[in-house]
Amino acid sequence: MSAGGVDEAGVQASLERKAADELDAEVASGSLVARLESFVIGGFALGALGLSTYNVVVRYFDPSLMLELVEEVQVYLIVWAVFLALGAVTRTDRHVKADLFVSMLPPRVARGLVVFTEVLGLAFALLLAYLGIGIAWQAYDFGDVSITSLRFPLWIYIAALPAGALSMAAGYAVRIAHLVRNRRQAAGTDGTARLQRERRT
Amino acid sequence: MIGAYLALFLLMLLAGIPIYLTMGVTGALMFGSDGSLLAYAQKLVDELNSSTLIAVPYFVIAATFMERGGVARALIEAAEAWIGRVHGGLGLVAVLSCTIFAAMCGSSVATAIAMGTILVPAMIRGGYDRPFAAGIVGASGTLGILVPPSLAFVVYGVLADVSIPKLFLAGVVPGLLQAALLAIYILWVSRGRGYKSEASLDLRQKAARTVRAVPALGVPVLVLGGLYGGIVTLTESAALSAVVAILLSLFVYRGLRPGQLLPVMALSVRNAAAIMIIIAVALAFGHWITETGIANKAVALIEAWGVQGWQFLIAINLILLLLGMFLEVYSVMLLMVPILLPLLAPLGIDPLHFGVVIVINMEIALLTPPVGLNLFVIANISNTPLAQVVRGTAPFVVLMLVLLVALTYIPAISLWFPMWVMGR
Image: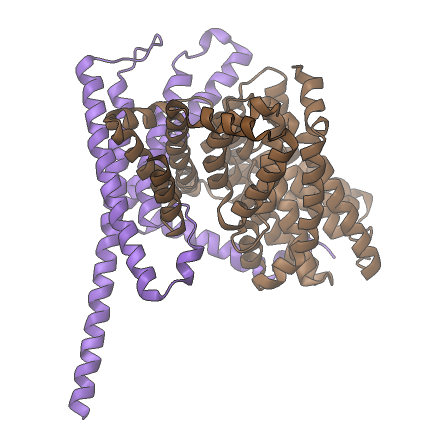
Protein backbone atom coordinates (compact mmCIF):
# COMPACT_ATOMS: atom_id res chain seq x y z
CA MET A 1 0.00 0.00 0.00
CA SER A 2 1.44 3.29 -1.00
CA ALA A 3 0.53 6.67 0.29
CA GLY A 4 1.48 7.88 -3.10
CA GLY A 5 -1.20 5.61 -4.45
CA VAL A 6 -3.79 7.65 -2.62
CA ASP A 7 -3.50 10.34 -5.29
CA GLU A 8 -6.65 9.11 -6.90
CA ALA A 9 -8.50 8.60 -3.63
CA GLY A 10 -11.81 10.40 -3.55
CA VAL A 11 -11.47 11.93 -0.10
CA GLN A 12 -8.09 13.48 -0.78
CA ALA A 13 -9.06 14.75 -4.22
CA SER A 14 -12.31 16.25 -2.97
CA LEU A 15 -10.59 17.89 -0.01
CA GLU A 16 -7.93 19.41 -2.22
CA ARG A 17 -10.64 20.63 -4.58
CA LYS A 18 -12.59 22.05 -1.66
CA ALA A 19 -9.54 23.86 -0.27
CA ALA A 20 -8.68 25.23 -3.72
CA ASP A 21 -12.29 26.33 -4.27
CA GLU A 22 -12.33 28.06 -0.88
CA LEU A 23 -9.21 29.97 -1.77
CA ASP A 24 -10.36 30.79 -5.29
CA ALA A 25 -13.61 32.03 -3.82
CA GLU A 26 -11.63 34.15 -1.41
CA VAL A 27 -9.49 35.57 -4.20
CA ALA A 28 -12.23 36.17 -6.69
CA SER A 29 -15.44 36.64 -4.82
CA GLY A 30 -16.72 38.74 -2.01
CA SER A 31 -17.30 42.41 -1.91
CA LEU A 32 -14.58 44.85 -2.75
CA VAL A 33 -14.30 45.61 0.96
CA ALA A 34 -13.73 41.94 1.83
CA ARG A 35 -11.06 41.58 -0.88
CA LEU A 36 -9.41 44.79 0.20
CA GLU A 37 -9.48 43.56 3.81
CA SER A 38 -7.78 40.33 2.74
CA PHE A 39 -5.20 42.28 0.76
CA VAL A 40 -4.40 44.64 3.65
CA ILE A 41 -4.29 41.91 6.33
CA GLY A 42 -2.19 39.59 4.15
CA GLY A 43 -0.01 42.51 3.08
CA PHE A 44 0.70 43.63 6.64
CA ALA A 45 1.63 40.11 7.70
CA LEU A 46 3.80 39.63 4.62
CA GLY A 47 5.50 42.96 5.32
CA ALA A 48 6.27 41.93 8.90
CA LEU A 49 7.67 38.59 7.74
CA GLY A 50 9.74 40.32 5.08
CA LEU A 51 11.27 42.73 7.59
CA SER A 52 12.09 39.97 10.05
CA THR A 53 13.65 37.80 7.36
CA TYR A 54 15.66 40.72 6.00
CA ASN A 55 17.28 41.28 9.38
CA VAL A 56 18.03 37.58 9.87
CA VAL A 57 19.67 37.34 6.45
CA VAL A 58 21.74 40.53 6.60
CA ARG A 59 22.83 39.76 10.15
CA TYR A 60 24.54 36.70 8.72
CA PHE A 61 26.21 38.49 5.81
CA ASP A 62 26.65 42.10 6.85
CA PRO A 63 25.34 43.16 10.28
CA SER A 64 25.85 46.83 9.45
CA LEU A 65 22.87 46.60 7.08
CA MET A 66 20.49 45.53 9.85
CA LEU A 67 17.50 47.76 10.50
CA GLU A 68 16.92 48.72 14.12
CA LEU A 69 13.26 49.41 13.53
CA VAL A 70 12.37 45.85 12.54
CA GLU A 71 11.52 44.41 15.93
CA GLU A 72 9.22 47.30 16.72
CA VAL A 73 7.59 47.78 13.32
CA GLN A 74 6.81 44.10 12.83
CA VAL A 75 4.86 44.12 16.10
CA TYR A 76 2.84 47.13 14.91
CA LEU A 77 2.17 45.51 11.52
CA ILE A 78 1.08 42.20 13.03
CA VAL A 79 -1.08 43.81 15.71
CA TRP A 80 -2.81 45.94 13.06
CA ALA A 81 -3.32 42.85 10.88
CA VAL A 82 -4.72 40.87 13.82
CA PHE A 83 -7.14 43.62 14.87
CA LEU A 84 -8.34 44.20 11.31
CA ALA A 85 -8.85 40.46 10.90
CA LEU A 86 -11.27 40.46 13.84
CA GLY A 87 -13.98 41.90 11.60
CA ALA A 88 -13.88 38.84 9.34
CA VAL A 89 -13.56 36.52 12.34
CA THR A 90 -16.74 38.05 13.78
CA ARG A 91 -18.62 38.16 10.47
CA THR A 92 -17.94 34.49 9.83
CA ASP A 93 -18.67 33.55 13.48
CA ARG A 94 -15.23 32.05 14.07
CA HIS A 95 -14.72 33.25 17.62
CA VAL A 96 -13.86 30.40 19.97
CA LYS A 97 -16.76 29.42 22.21
CA ALA A 98 -18.16 26.51 24.20
CA ASP A 99 -21.57 26.08 22.57
CA LEU A 100 -22.22 22.51 23.67
CA PHE A 101 -24.80 23.40 26.30
CA VAL A 102 -26.56 25.82 24.00
CA SER A 103 -27.09 23.05 21.47
CA MET A 104 -28.94 21.08 24.18
CA LEU A 105 -31.39 23.91 24.86
CA PRO A 106 -34.83 24.21 23.20
CA PRO A 107 -34.42 25.95 19.79
CA ARG A 108 -36.32 29.05 20.93
CA VAL A 109 -34.04 29.59 23.94
CA ALA A 110 -30.93 28.82 21.88
CA ARG A 111 -32.03 31.37 19.25
CA GLY A 112 -32.61 33.92 21.99
CA LEU A 113 -29.11 33.34 23.32
CA VAL A 114 -27.63 33.77 19.86
CA VAL A 115 -29.37 37.14 19.50
CA PHE A 116 -28.22 38.14 23.01
CA THR A 117 -24.62 37.16 22.17
CA GLU A 118 -24.60 39.20 18.97
CA VAL A 119 -26.04 42.27 20.72
CA LEU A 120 -23.62 41.91 23.64
CA GLY A 121 -20.74 41.53 21.18
CA LEU A 122 -21.83 44.66 19.33
CA ALA A 123 -22.07 46.62 22.57
CA PHE A 124 -18.64 45.40 23.74
CA ALA A 125 -17.05 46.18 20.37
CA LEU A 126 -18.52 49.70 20.45
CA LEU A 127 -17.28 50.17 24.02
CA LEU A 128 -13.78 49.07 22.98
CA ALA A 129 -13.90 51.41 19.98
CA TYR A 130 -14.92 54.31 22.23
CA LEU A 131 -12.22 53.53 24.80
CA GLY A 132 -9.68 52.89 22.07
CA ILE A 133 -10.35 56.26 20.47
CA GLY A 134 -9.95 57.78 23.93
CA ILE A 135 -6.52 56.30 24.58
CA ALA A 136 -5.34 56.86 20.99
CA TRP A 137 -6.37 60.52 21.28
CA GLN A 138 -4.56 60.80 24.61
CA ALA A 139 -1.40 59.35 23.06
CA TYR A 140 -1.71 61.77 20.13
CA ASP A 141 -2.44 64.71 22.39
CA PHE A 142 0.48 63.98 24.73
CA GLY A 143 2.77 63.28 21.77
CA ASP A 144 3.60 59.80 23.10
CA VAL A 145 6.32 58.07 21.11
CA SER A 146 8.06 54.73 21.51
CA ILE A 147 11.15 54.59 23.71
CA THR A 148 13.31 53.22 20.91
CA SER A 149 15.41 55.30 18.54
CA LEU A 150 12.57 55.15 16.02
CA ARG A 151 10.43 57.40 18.25
CA PHE A 152 7.32 55.95 16.60
CA PRO A 153 4.10 57.90 17.33
CA LEU A 154 2.22 55.49 19.58
CA TRP A 155 -1.24 56.73 18.65
CA ILE A 156 -0.78 54.98 15.29
CA TYR A 157 -0.18 51.67 17.06
CA ILE A 158 -2.97 52.23 19.61
CA ALA A 159 -5.41 53.16 16.83
CA ALA A 160 -5.39 49.47 15.88
CA LEU A 161 -7.70 48.84 18.86
CA PRO A 162 -10.53 51.16 17.80
CA ALA A 163 -10.04 50.16 14.15
CA GLY A 164 -10.33 46.48 15.05
CA ALA A 165 -13.22 47.11 17.44
CA LEU A 166 -15.10 49.03 14.73
CA SER A 167 -14.51 46.24 12.24
CA MET A 168 -15.83 43.79 14.86
CA ALA A 169 -18.84 46.04 15.44
CA ALA A 170 -19.48 46.02 11.68
CA GLY A 171 -19.21 42.23 11.74
CA TYR A 172 -21.76 41.99 14.55
CA ALA A 173 -24.05 44.47 12.77
CA VAL A 174 -23.95 42.30 9.62
CA ARG A 175 -24.79 39.21 11.69
CA ILE A 176 -27.65 40.94 13.50
CA ALA A 177 -29.07 42.23 10.20
CA HIS A 178 -28.85 38.68 8.87
CA LEU A 179 -30.70 37.31 11.91
CA VAL A 180 -33.45 39.95 11.55
CA ARG A 181 -33.79 39.26 7.81
CA ASN A 182 -34.03 35.52 8.42
CA ARG A 183 -36.66 36.05 11.09
CA ARG A 184 -38.71 38.27 8.79
CA GLN A 185 -38.43 35.74 5.99
CA ALA A 186 -39.47 32.95 8.35
CA ALA A 187 -42.40 35.05 9.58
CA GLY A 188 -43.33 35.87 5.96
CA THR A 189 -43.24 32.20 5.03
CA ASP A 190 -45.39 31.32 8.04
CA GLY A 191 -47.86 34.10 7.17
CA THR A 192 -48.14 32.99 3.54
CA ALA A 193 -48.65 29.36 4.59
CA ARG A 194 -51.34 30.40 7.07
CA LEU A 195 -53.10 32.50 4.40
CA GLN A 196 -53.03 29.60 1.96
CA ARG A 197 -54.46 27.26 4.61
CA GLU A 198 -57.23 29.76 5.38
CA ARG A 199 -58.07 30.12 1.69
CA ARG A 200 -58.27 26.37 1.28
CA THR A 201 -60.65 26.03 4.20
CA MET B 1 -18.38 41.05 44.55
CA ILE B 2 -15.73 38.68 43.27
CA GLY B 3 -18.24 35.82 43.64
CA ALA B 4 -20.73 37.74 41.48
CA TYR B 5 -18.10 38.27 38.76
CA LEU B 6 -17.23 34.59 38.87
CA ALA B 7 -20.89 33.57 38.60
CA LEU B 8 -21.41 35.92 35.67
CA PHE B 9 -18.28 34.59 34.03
CA LEU B 10 -19.42 30.95 34.31
CA LEU B 11 -22.94 31.78 33.19
CA MET B 12 -21.67 33.53 30.07
CA LEU B 13 -19.30 30.67 29.34
CA LEU B 14 -22.10 28.11 29.58
CA ALA B 15 -24.39 30.30 27.48
CA GLY B 16 -22.05 29.78 24.53
CA ILE B 17 -20.82 33.37 24.51
CA PRO B 18 -17.39 33.56 22.83
CA ILE B 19 -14.52 33.14 25.30
CA TYR B 20 -12.97 36.50 24.40
CA LEU B 21 -16.33 38.21 25.04
CA THR B 22 -16.87 36.37 28.32
CA MET B 23 -13.43 37.35 29.61
CA GLY B 24 -13.61 40.77 27.99
CA VAL B 25 -16.97 41.75 29.50
CA THR B 26 -16.01 40.38 32.94
CA GLY B 27 -12.66 42.18 32.74
CA ALA B 28 -14.31 45.44 31.67
CA LEU B 29 -16.76 45.18 34.60
CA MET B 30 -13.90 44.51 37.01
CA PHE B 31 -11.81 47.43 35.77
CA GLY B 32 -14.96 49.56 35.44
CA SER B 33 -15.84 49.00 39.10
CA ASP B 34 -12.59 50.78 39.95
CA GLY B 35 -13.45 53.54 37.49
CA SER B 36 -10.52 52.60 35.25
CA LEU B 37 -12.08 51.54 31.97
CA LEU B 38 -9.52 53.51 29.98
CA ALA B 39 -6.80 51.60 31.84
CA TYR B 40 -8.48 48.39 30.67
CA ALA B 41 -8.29 49.45 27.03
CA GLN B 42 -4.71 50.58 27.52
CA LYS B 43 -3.89 47.20 29.08
CA LEU B 44 -5.28 45.38 26.03
CA VAL B 45 -3.04 47.20 23.56
CA ASP B 46 -0.04 47.18 25.89
CA GLU B 47 -0.22 43.40 26.37
CA LEU B 48 -0.17 42.82 22.62
CA ASN B 49 2.85 45.09 22.17
CA SER B 50 5.22 42.17 22.62
CA SER B 51 7.75 40.87 20.16
CA THR B 52 7.43 37.42 21.78
CA LEU B 53 3.69 37.26 21.33
CA ILE B 54 3.86 37.84 17.59
CA ALA B 55 5.52 34.43 17.34
CA VAL B 56 1.94 33.10 17.68
CA PRO B 57 0.66 34.49 14.34
CA TYR B 58 3.97 33.57 12.69
CA PHE B 59 3.65 29.94 13.77
CA VAL B 60 -0.01 29.91 12.67
CA ILE B 61 1.07 31.22 9.24
CA ALA B 62 3.71 28.47 9.04
CA ALA B 63 1.19 25.80 10.04
CA THR B 64 -1.41 26.98 7.52
CA PHE B 65 1.04 27.00 4.60
CA MET B 66 2.52 23.63 5.54
CA GLU B 67 -0.94 22.14 5.89
CA ARG B 68 -2.04 23.35 2.46
CA GLY B 69 1.22 23.46 0.57
CA GLY B 70 2.00 19.78 -0.09
CA VAL B 71 4.70 19.48 2.58
CA ALA B 72 2.88 16.68 4.39
CA ARG B 73 2.78 14.39 1.36
CA ALA B 74 6.54 14.59 0.82
CA LEU B 75 7.18 13.65 4.47
CA ILE B 76 4.73 10.77 4.40
CA GLU B 77 6.15 9.32 1.20
CA ALA B 78 9.69 9.43 2.58
CA ALA B 79 8.69 7.83 5.87
CA GLU B 80 6.72 5.18 4.05
CA ALA B 81 9.69 4.33 1.83
CA TRP B 82 11.71 3.29 4.87
CA ILE B 83 9.26 1.90 7.41
CA GLY B 84 6.14 1.21 5.34
CA ARG B 85 6.77 -2.54 5.04
CA VAL B 86 6.93 -3.54 8.69
CA HIS B 87 3.84 -4.63 10.64
CA GLY B 88 1.61 -1.59 11.06
CA GLY B 89 3.91 0.25 8.66
CA LEU B 90 1.41 2.94 7.67
CA GLY B 91 0.50 3.50 11.32
CA LEU B 92 4.17 3.95 12.16
CA VAL B 93 4.53 6.25 9.16
CA ALA B 94 1.71 8.32 10.68
CA VAL B 95 3.49 8.59 14.04
CA LEU B 96 6.85 9.42 12.47
CA SER B 97 5.44 11.91 9.96
CA CYS B 98 3.33 13.61 12.63
CA THR B 99 6.36 13.91 14.90
CA ILE B 100 8.43 15.49 12.12
CA PHE B 101 5.56 17.70 10.97
CA ALA B 102 5.05 18.76 14.59
CA ALA B 103 8.68 19.84 14.65
CA MET B 104 7.84 22.21 11.82
CA CYS B 105 4.43 23.72 12.51
CA GLY B 106 3.53 23.83 16.23
CA SER B 107 -0.18 23.13 15.81
CA SER B 108 -2.01 19.89 16.54
CA VAL B 109 -5.01 20.62 14.39
CA ALA B 110 -2.83 21.54 11.40
CA THR B 111 -0.83 18.33 11.93
CA ALA B 112 -3.99 16.21 12.13
CA ILE B 113 -5.47 17.81 9.01
CA ALA B 114 -2.31 17.64 6.94
CA MET B 115 -1.51 14.04 7.88
CA GLY B 116 -5.03 12.69 8.25
CA THR B 117 -6.11 13.86 4.83
CA ILE B 118 -3.58 11.52 3.24
CA LEU B 119 -2.99 8.81 5.80
CA VAL B 120 -6.45 7.86 7.05
CA PRO B 121 -7.72 6.96 3.54
CA ALA B 122 -4.39 5.22 2.85
CA MET B 123 -4.70 3.08 5.98
CA ILE B 124 -8.33 2.23 5.26
CA ARG B 125 -7.36 1.16 1.73
CA GLY B 126 -4.55 -0.88 3.28
CA GLY B 127 -7.14 -2.87 5.23
CA TYR B 128 -6.84 -1.09 8.58
CA ASP B 129 -9.90 -0.99 10.78
CA ARG B 130 -11.45 2.48 10.23
CA PRO B 131 -11.64 3.53 13.93
CA PHE B 132 -8.04 2.34 14.47
CA ALA B 133 -6.80 4.38 11.49
CA ALA B 134 -8.67 7.46 12.72
CA GLY B 135 -7.36 6.94 16.26
CA ILE B 136 -3.74 6.71 15.10
CA VAL B 137 -3.80 10.03 13.27
CA GLY B 138 -5.95 11.74 15.90
CA ALA B 139 -3.53 10.79 18.68
CA SER B 140 -0.34 11.34 16.65
CA GLY B 141 -1.66 14.73 15.54
CA THR B 142 -1.72 15.94 19.14
CA LEU B 143 2.09 15.85 19.09
CA GLY B 144 1.82 19.17 17.22
CA ILE B 145 1.61 21.10 20.49
CA LEU B 146 4.15 19.04 22.44
CA VAL B 147 7.07 18.65 20.06
CA PRO B 148 8.88 21.97 19.57
CA PRO B 149 8.16 24.49 18.19
CA SER B 150 4.78 24.53 19.89
CA LEU B 151 2.14 27.22 19.77
CA ALA B 152 0.80 26.07 23.13
CA PHE B 153 4.23 26.52 24.76
CA VAL B 154 4.51 30.01 23.25
CA VAL B 155 1.13 30.98 24.72
CA TYR B 156 1.98 29.41 28.11
CA GLY B 157 5.43 31.02 28.10
CA VAL B 158 3.91 34.46 27.51
CA LEU B 159 1.25 33.98 30.18
CA ALA B 160 3.59 32.49 32.77
CA ASP B 161 6.64 34.54 31.85
CA VAL B 162 8.71 31.38 31.42
CA SER B 163 11.56 30.98 28.91
CA ILE B 164 9.93 29.69 25.71
CA PRO B 165 13.13 28.06 24.35
CA LYS B 166 13.35 26.13 27.65
CA LEU B 167 9.70 25.13 27.36
CA PHE B 168 10.34 23.88 23.83
CA LEU B 169 13.19 21.71 25.12
CA ALA B 170 11.00 20.48 27.98
CA GLY B 171 8.62 19.11 25.35
CA VAL B 172 11.24 17.06 23.52
CA VAL B 173 11.52 13.99 25.80
CA PRO B 174 7.78 13.81 26.57
CA GLY B 175 7.10 14.18 22.83
CA LEU B 176 9.45 11.34 21.95
CA LEU B 177 8.03 9.23 24.78
CA GLN B 178 4.52 9.78 23.50
CA ALA B 179 5.56 8.91 19.94
CA ALA B 180 7.25 5.73 21.23
CA LEU B 181 4.18 4.74 23.28
CA LEU B 182 1.89 5.22 20.29
CA ALA B 183 4.28 3.31 17.99
CA ILE B 184 4.56 0.35 20.38
CA TYR B 185 0.78 0.10 20.69
CA ILE B 186 0.31 0.35 16.91
CA LEU B 187 2.94 -2.33 16.34
CA TRP B 188 1.29 -4.62 18.91
CA VAL B 189 -2.23 -4.22 17.47
CA SER B 190 -0.98 -4.50 13.87
CA ARG B 191 0.86 -7.75 14.57
CA GLY B 192 -2.31 -9.20 16.05
CA ARG B 193 -4.45 -8.11 13.12
CA GLY B 194 -1.90 -8.78 10.40
CA TYR B 195 -1.66 -5.23 9.03
CA LYS B 196 1.32 -5.48 6.72
CA SER B 197 2.07 -4.04 3.30
CA GLU B 198 3.61 -6.28 0.67
CA ALA B 199 4.53 -3.49 -1.75
CA SER B 200 8.22 -2.69 -1.77
CA LEU B 201 10.43 -0.02 -3.25
CA ASP B 202 13.94 -0.40 -4.59
CA LEU B 203 16.78 1.68 -3.20
CA ARG B 204 16.57 4.24 -6.00
CA GLN B 205 12.90 4.90 -5.33
CA LYS B 206 13.61 5.18 -1.62
CA ALA B 207 16.40 7.63 -2.28
CA ALA B 208 14.22 9.70 -4.64
CA ARG B 209 11.48 10.01 -2.02
CA THR B 210 13.99 10.92 0.66
CA VAL B 211 15.61 13.59 -1.51
CA ARG B 212 12.18 15.06 -2.22
CA ALA B 213 11.55 15.31 1.53
CA VAL B 214 14.91 16.93 2.31
CA PRO B 215 13.70 20.55 1.99
CA ALA B 216 10.84 19.79 4.41
CA LEU B 217 13.15 17.95 6.79
CA GLY B 218 15.43 20.97 6.70
CA VAL B 219 12.78 23.21 8.28
CA PRO B 220 13.12 22.01 11.89
CA VAL B 221 16.89 21.92 11.50
CA LEU B 222 16.90 25.50 10.27
CA VAL B 223 14.34 26.87 12.72
CA LEU B 224 15.31 25.01 15.90
CA GLY B 225 19.00 24.94 15.00
CA GLY B 226 18.88 28.71 14.50
CA LEU B 227 17.08 29.22 17.80
CA TYR B 228 19.34 27.05 19.96
CA GLY B 229 22.45 27.99 18.04
CA GLY B 230 21.84 31.56 19.15
CA ILE B 231 21.52 32.75 15.53
CA VAL B 232 17.90 33.85 15.74
CA THR B 233 15.48 34.87 18.48
CA LEU B 234 12.24 32.99 19.13
CA THR B 235 10.21 35.46 17.07
CA GLU B 236 12.73 35.37 14.25
CA SER B 237 12.66 31.58 14.27
CA ALA B 238 8.86 31.67 14.01
CA ALA B 239 9.10 34.17 11.14
CA LEU B 240 11.73 32.04 9.46
CA SER B 241 9.52 28.99 9.81
CA ALA B 242 6.66 30.88 8.14
CA VAL B 243 8.86 32.17 5.30
CA VAL B 244 10.31 28.71 4.61
CA ALA B 245 6.81 27.19 4.69
CA ILE B 246 5.65 29.77 2.13
CA LEU B 247 8.64 29.13 -0.14
CA LEU B 248 8.22 25.35 0.07
CA SER B 249 4.48 25.57 -0.61
CA LEU B 250 4.85 27.87 -3.60
CA PHE B 251 8.07 26.78 -5.27
CA VAL B 252 9.11 23.31 -4.07
CA TYR B 253 5.98 21.24 -3.40
CA ARG B 254 3.67 23.64 -5.26
CA GLY B 255 0.57 22.89 -3.26
CA LEU B 256 -0.33 26.56 -3.59
CA ARG B 257 -0.14 29.06 -6.44
CA PRO B 258 1.53 32.48 -6.06
CA GLY B 259 -1.88 34.12 -6.52
CA GLN B 260 -3.04 32.38 -3.36
CA LEU B 261 -0.29 33.89 -1.22
CA LEU B 262 -2.18 36.87 0.20
CA PRO B 263 -5.51 35.08 0.69
CA VAL B 264 -3.82 32.22 2.59
CA MET B 265 -1.82 34.76 4.56
CA ALA B 266 -5.05 36.61 5.47
CA LEU B 267 -6.67 33.30 6.37
CA SER B 268 -3.76 32.50 8.68
CA VAL B 269 -3.96 35.90 10.37
CA ARG B 270 -7.71 35.37 10.93
CA ASN B 271 -6.98 32.00 12.55
CA ALA B 272 -4.37 33.68 14.73
CA ALA B 273 -6.64 36.65 15.50
CA ALA B 274 -9.21 34.38 17.14
CA ILE B 275 -6.46 33.25 19.57
CA MET B 276 -4.75 36.65 19.96
CA ILE B 277 -7.91 38.46 21.08
CA ILE B 278 -8.39 35.85 23.83
CA ILE B 279 -4.74 36.24 24.83
CA ALA B 280 -5.16 40.02 25.10
CA VAL B 281 -8.24 39.84 27.32
CA ALA B 282 -6.79 36.93 29.33
CA LEU B 283 -3.62 38.91 30.07
CA ALA B 284 -5.70 41.89 31.21
CA PHE B 285 -7.82 39.50 33.27
CA GLY B 286 -4.66 38.01 34.83
CA HIS B 287 -3.43 41.51 35.62
CA TRP B 288 -6.67 42.23 37.48
CA ILE B 289 -6.36 38.98 39.43
CA THR B 290 -2.86 39.97 40.54
CA GLU B 291 -3.87 43.54 41.39
CA THR B 292 -6.86 42.57 43.52
CA GLY B 293 -4.90 40.17 45.67
CA ILE B 294 -7.18 37.20 44.87
CA ALA B 295 -4.07 35.18 44.15
CA ASN B 296 -2.63 35.93 47.60
CA LYS B 297 -5.89 34.90 49.22
CA ALA B 298 -5.88 31.64 47.25
CA VAL B 299 -2.29 30.99 48.34
CA ALA B 300 -3.23 31.65 51.98
CA LEU B 301 -6.19 29.29 51.64
CA ILE B 302 -4.03 26.54 50.18
CA GLU B 303 -1.50 26.98 52.97
CA ALA B 304 -4.26 26.94 55.60
CA TRP B 305 -5.64 23.70 54.19
CA GLY B 306 -2.16 22.22 54.10
CA VAL B 307 -2.45 21.25 50.44
CA GLN B 308 0.67 19.51 49.12
CA GLY B 309 2.08 19.91 45.61
CA TRP B 310 1.14 16.39 44.55
CA GLN B 311 -2.44 16.82 45.80
CA PHE B 312 -2.69 20.11 43.94
CA LEU B 313 -1.46 18.45 40.74
CA ILE B 314 -4.06 15.68 41.02
CA ALA B 315 -6.82 18.26 41.45
CA ILE B 316 -5.50 20.41 38.59
CA ASN B 317 -5.18 17.43 36.25
CA LEU B 318 -8.79 16.46 36.97
CA ILE B 319 -10.03 20.02 36.46
CA LEU B 320 -8.03 20.42 33.24
CA LEU B 321 -9.27 17.09 31.89
CA LEU B 322 -12.84 18.07 32.68
CA LEU B 323 -12.50 21.56 31.18
CA GLY B 324 -10.73 20.08 28.18
CA MET B 325 -13.78 17.97 27.44
CA PHE B 326 -15.90 21.08 26.99
CA LEU B 327 -13.56 23.88 25.94
CA GLU B 328 -11.09 24.50 23.16
CA VAL B 329 -7.40 24.03 24.08
CA TYR B 330 -6.21 27.63 24.18
CA SER B 331 -9.32 28.75 26.03
CA VAL B 332 -8.59 26.32 28.87
CA MET B 333 -5.01 27.49 29.03
CA LEU B 334 -5.90 31.16 28.92
CA LEU B 335 -8.60 30.72 31.53
CA MET B 336 -6.60 28.66 33.99
CA VAL B 337 -2.97 29.79 33.78
CA PRO B 338 -3.46 33.32 35.17
CA ILE B 339 -5.39 31.84 38.11
CA LEU B 340 -3.05 28.93 38.84
CA LEU B 341 0.29 30.58 38.27
CA PRO B 342 0.61 32.38 41.63
CA LEU B 343 -0.03 29.06 43.42
CA LEU B 344 2.93 27.24 41.88
CA ALA B 345 5.82 28.80 43.82
CA PRO B 346 4.29 28.27 47.32
CA LEU B 347 3.66 24.63 46.41
CA GLY B 348 7.17 24.15 45.05
CA ILE B 349 6.04 23.36 41.51
CA ASP B 350 8.42 24.34 38.70
CA PRO B 351 6.51 26.47 36.14
CA LEU B 352 8.49 24.73 33.36
CA HIS B 353 7.27 21.34 34.57
CA PHE B 354 3.75 22.70 35.01
CA GLY B 355 3.81 23.94 31.40
CA VAL B 356 4.44 20.39 30.18
CA VAL B 357 1.68 19.01 32.43
CA ILE B 358 -0.75 21.59 31.04
CA VAL B 359 0.20 20.83 27.43
CA ILE B 360 -0.22 17.06 27.89
CA ASN B 361 -3.65 17.78 29.38
CA MET B 362 -4.43 19.90 26.35
CA GLU B 363 -3.35 17.10 24.04
CA ILE B 364 -5.82 14.80 25.78
CA ALA B 365 -8.43 17.55 25.54
CA LEU B 366 -8.04 17.41 21.76
CA LEU B 367 -9.17 13.77 21.89
CA THR B 368 -11.90 13.78 24.52
CA PRO B 369 -15.54 14.21 23.54
CA PRO B 370 -17.79 16.10 23.36
CA VAL B 371 -15.45 18.96 22.30
CA GLY B 372 -12.24 17.32 21.08
CA LEU B 373 -11.06 19.27 18.08
CA ASN B 374 -8.93 16.48 16.61
CA LEU B 375 -11.94 14.15 16.76
CA PHE B 376 -13.95 16.52 14.59
CA VAL B 377 -11.04 17.07 12.22
CA ILE B 378 -10.47 13.35 11.67
CA ALA B 379 -14.19 12.58 11.40
CA ASN B 380 -14.55 15.35 8.85
CA ILE B 381 -11.56 14.59 6.64
CA SER B 382 -12.04 10.83 6.61
CA ASN B 383 -15.85 10.72 6.37
CA THR B 384 -15.86 8.59 9.51
CA PRO B 385 -18.74 8.82 12.00
CA LEU B 386 -17.66 10.68 15.13
CA ALA B 387 -18.55 7.71 17.34
CA GLN B 388 -16.08 5.51 15.43
CA VAL B 389 -13.35 8.12 15.76
CA VAL B 390 -14.01 8.34 19.51
CA ARG B 391 -13.86 4.54 19.75
CA GLY B 392 -10.61 4.51 17.79
CA THR B 393 -8.91 7.18 19.88
CA ALA B 394 -10.02 5.74 23.26
CA PRO B 395 -7.03 3.33 23.68
CA PHE B 396 -4.66 6.14 22.74
CA VAL B 397 -6.26 8.43 25.33
CA VAL B 398 -5.59 5.74 27.95
CA LEU B 399 -1.92 5.65 26.87
CA MET B 400 -1.71 9.40 27.11
CA LEU B 401 -3.24 9.37 30.58
CA VAL B 402 -0.47 6.99 31.63
CA LEU B 403 2.04 9.43 30.15
CA LEU B 404 0.34 12.31 31.97
CA VAL B 405 0.65 10.54 35.33
CA ALA B 406 4.33 9.77 34.67
CA LEU B 407 5.11 13.33 33.63
CA THR B 408 3.13 14.84 36.49
CA TYR B 409 4.94 12.90 39.20
CA ILE B 410 8.38 12.53 37.64
CA PRO B 411 9.29 16.14 36.76
CA ALA B 412 12.79 15.03 35.75
CA ILE B 413 11.39 13.51 32.53
CA SER B 414 10.54 16.94 31.23
CA LEU B 415 13.12 18.99 33.13
CA TRP B 416 16.44 17.23 32.67
CA PHE B 417 16.80 17.99 28.96
CA PRO B 418 16.27 21.78 29.17
CA MET B 419 18.50 21.87 32.27
CA TRP B 420 21.17 19.86 30.51
CA VAL B 421 21.13 22.09 27.41
CA MET B 422 20.50 25.50 28.93
CA GLY B 423 21.21 25.10 32.61
CA ARG B 424 19.07 26.48 35.45
